[in-house]
Image (cartoon, rainbow over all chains, first blue to last red; front, side, top):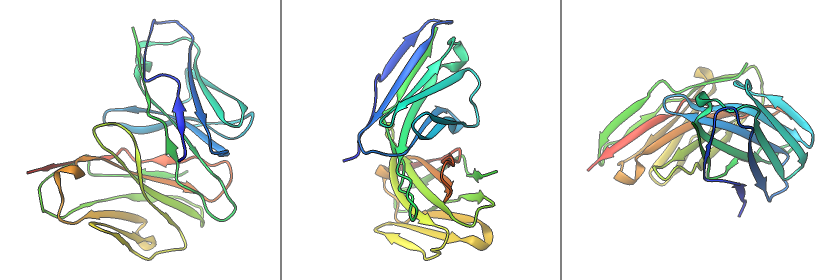
Length: 115
Length: 115
């Protein structure tokens, strides 16, 4: 089974702290994604990466950065956490092939609260 | 730009009713992939189906069926004889066949099935 593992299920941080959310996948997928999920807004894409050291901004990248030094790991960084970044964060990975894209596999999510 | 619209925010039905969840998409790509995901109250996103742009055949899987129509840019999902366990948030998603493109989600439809 494909596994996408997020480092924390619940996280509480203070305003202004630098926050790292880690995501690891074990299926050699090229694509990795970070989303945030808020009630009524669905899943909004923050950043995605289609290869090591490659990153692309999604719809809401402001206040976030990412790092992908190894294929299996994709980190989301909140440079200076603010209360409006309190949310559920979801990591996903998928295989990109020349013929067929597979579905994205999701981690269990990290519920981040910034106080 | 790619976009997915799920116009129905919430739907409530009684058990055994049929229900259709609408999904309308926008893309300029000729090769693209559409997905449906289910998110039950437990929170984990569950993949339901993938459809590529060259395959307009409808698909049926048990009580679930999907109607893909390129002419109207729609990929609708029908649950026949709904059950309480179908209560969840359902997301439609889109990605293109190009490397390095994002997976974009609609805002989701919350389905409540009562007994």
